[in-house]
Amino acid sequence: MECNIDKNISSCNCSYEPCPRKGSCCDCLKYHLKSRELPGCCFPADAEKTYNRSFEFFASLVNGNKV
Image (cartoon, rainbow, N blue to C red):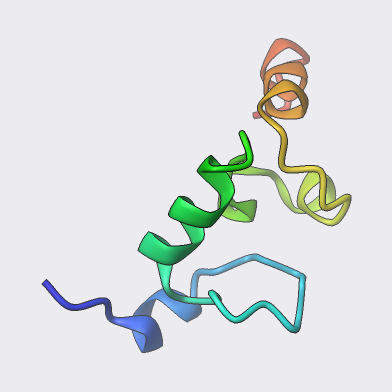
């Protein structure tokens, strides 16, 4: 299966502009998981802009009913 970057990029909410993985979900997920992080698309817009992609931050958002 090939990655459809043109289709994926339209729903990618990553605000980190120089990101070379924008729209390449497989690469993005692989990159973040090796650092115990989740991709920006897992976070609400205001939380995504903090660039804190940690599992712990995500869990705190879940506990606070923000995700």
